[in-house]
Length: 113
Picture 1 (cartoon, rainbow, N blue to C red):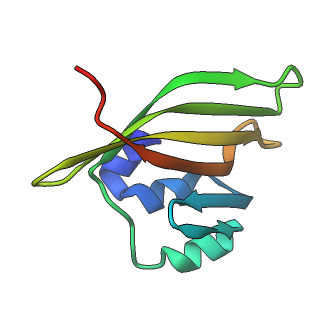
Picture 2 (cartoon, rainbow, N blue to C red):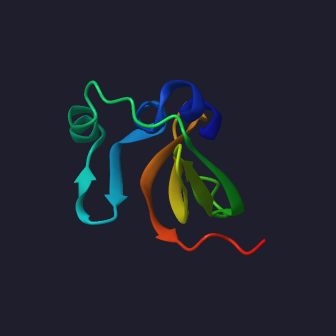
């Protein structure tokens, strides 16, 4: 999904993987509830291609139907780089593909080198 965001934009990547009941949490705003509402909010705004993320941990429920990932993100701009953490809850679909149920994150200080 991070690779798709680099090619198509962050919002486009979320929409590609969003479940119909997708909930997007964003710092400083109320959550957007539902894939269709997120699509309306992101209409004509594919989102940044300068954000990347990498999972640090992932777990799947014993049933194999729900799981989550969390990790670090990095947003690079010409004059600065921002860092943060994210969480994503996933639901396995009837066709075997995984879709996002919940997604959010927060800003953090730069990692120690």
